[in-house]
Image (cartoon, rainbow, N blue to C red; front, side, top):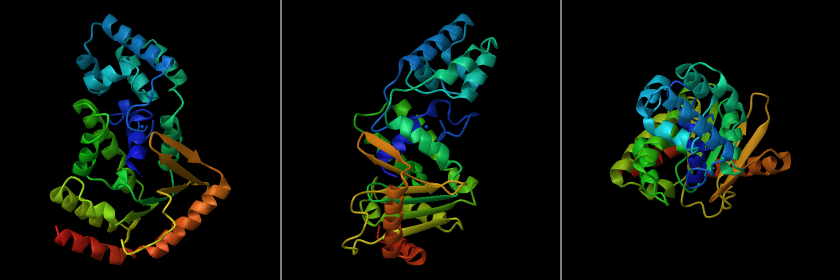
Amino acid sequence: MAEAFDDAEELGSGEAAGAVGGAPSWLGGGGGGEPDTSDSLKTFGAFLQGLREFHGLSREEFGERVMLSRHTIASIEIGRRMPDEDFAARADAALGNTGALRKAVKHLARQPGLAAWFRQWARLEAVAISLYTYECRVVPGLLQTEAYARTQFEQRLPPLSDEDIEAQLVARLGRQRLLVERPHTAFSFILDEHLILRQTGGPQVTGELIDHLLEMGARRNIEIQVLPLSTATHPGMDGPIVLQETPENRWFAYSEGQETGQLISDSKTISVLQKRYAKLRSQALTSEDSRGLLKRLRGAL
């Protein structure tokens, strides 16, 4: 998944309540930064702030009660981040148990855009039985190391604040639990060789990344293949391909560009993408040969 796609996962749909004591950060969490806020988010945030102040709690004190940082509380109160129902329940319990927050959170909505598309994808992804990813722009978020991800966030334009960088790191690393918590899900990744040769973050970060790829590729449910530079033409020339299969054996795809994205459910389009992915699999190095190439690239650093 490309960087923009991974940005959507963290901030698009509830990274705020993400990762401490709530739903997984990839559930509920466009483009180059936070999606546009909505009037309902601002109203919820103002109501939350009013209740918090009525009870004489600082953001830090309230955050301790709901297991979130004061920075996340601030983001929710100004309408930048989408709270989920778990957060609303914890907040309600900490602020008088009126039930108002639990009722209000059900009516929240963002402005239309990438984040909404990603929320649908993320909910499907969390229960998928197959997930296929071809990437030619950036190492997929599910496979990134913390140092690699931090490099991506620190180079973002427009720049992110330190707090936003840390929040996105928590969400991205949290989403990676899919790889270990779903041992029966078949994960397939095809990576262009130049993603490693670029040495994003420098030799040390690249070395750690290769070690991580080798470790993850050794798991029974994860296949990592490298598409070598010597492959002159291939069906991924139009960009990344991301496919997933649900427990009901329905297939979905996700496509994106800069500041845009969409969930694809059209069977004819998905059929085309499946054919392209199958061809890419046949052109990429086998898993064993890919491991050999990665080891050689590691040794050359």
